[in-house]
Length: 266
Image (tube, rainbow, N blue to C red):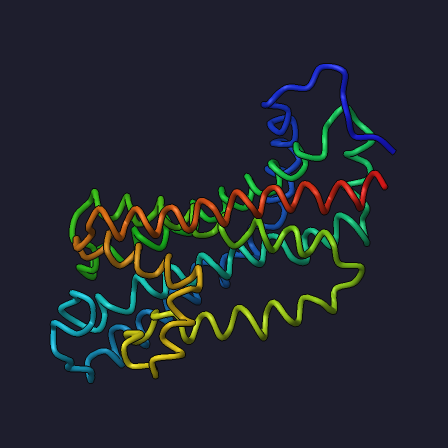
């Protein structure tokens, strides 16, 4: 089976836009609770209610003047990671194993890279929608330093989500059954959410664990989100975090095309 075309175009992935919009129009109701309502409840419970009992030194929680300001950027980044992973695990398995939609698409002039770009593009669109709603809902709480900072927070979520979605897509495309997703949800997503600086400063961890946590892509995203939200960004750290996430996303896209090509063509 071939997925090549005589006249390849870098914009062929747009031909799948109708498919993804139609799919989301029929399934968006199922994402309202997990993508919008649950994060808001967590922020109110942990940031507003629990945060009222936390009175730390203002210099310790990375420039935040309250626990609410500290925890919200972390929870937003963690939410972006979870949305990204959710869009490229079971959906990829569905299109490869159960519905075999990818095989139908590959029988058209579309290339494998178009299928990957279209799927990841839809994941980024979902991240944008979630991040914008999340930001608008939390703006009245005084979490964001400025409007420009809030815009930067939204853009960071897109890059952070792609940095997770692309490598996980490659992993999902290489799996033969859904049992492998257990490793992603239990041994990757949950530990990263708890120990990547979203809920407490990494300096509270023992030195070896702190060093490991600082290597995680979620901490890169949490730190970057917090900088933009609080207005504490500095060129050096921002450039380092952005470079880390860009490289991870680029390598992930390359691996995704490679893995899906093996499944569809060989």
